[in-house]
Amino acid sequence: METNFCNFSKEQEDALRGILGSIFSVNDESFQKIVDCYKVFKSDFKGPVKPGWQTIERKSLLPISENQVLINDFQSGEIQLGIDLPVLIDSENGSNKTVFIVAEDPLRGDKDRNIMISTPFGLHMEKERIGKQKICWKVVEHFLEKGYQVYVTDINKLWMKKDGEYKMPLDRLLFENFKSAFENEMEIFNPEFIVTFGKKAELAVTPFIKAQKILHFLHPSGSANKSWVKLNIGVCNDVNKIIYMKDQIDGALLK
Image (cartoon, rainbow, N blue to C red; front, side, top):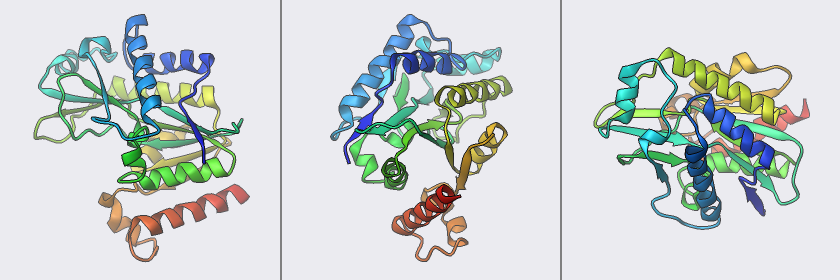
């Protein structure tokens, strides 16, 4: 299936600035850097790319927070930073119906002194769509086949980690800003259907549900396999997880 990747309208692009501006200090220069990242990701979509992420200087996207310790950590080259830019995926025929896929946060496994900018599940990268993240991509494709456009986003849009440690806790104001950003996303794209991956995404999204159809899935990664086994999907592998998710989606669409 031919797909369009991040073909945002001018109105949607302006709205993205507002979404990110709920969390970070975004000016014309820093937003242009974000736009430039999108341009690279769009060109990368059709084939393999290395390293797969783009970078922006730390000073370009400071989080909005009164916590000076967090700001200092953010500016420190010793702290790994990850931001995933939301993506919009559509079939070449287009659609006026939208589904949201909501994940937890932009996990990173690499080091860079700048902010590592990528997309949720690395969906701009072919190697991820056919590899580690094929479950998510198969869910995206299934919705495209059903006539939806798919908007994929992280509920927590910033990830911070000290080298050799677990991800760092973020302050309460930043989590409130994440909620404001998601509320803006809901208003702008007005989804008819919402899918969450993982418990944290489920809990964060639930207060915003109004008339939308919604499905909460376990996280597709192997870390949740013990819980997947309890669903009696057979052998706990990607194929059976995909079959289960598609069946659940089809059932929800019929309601």
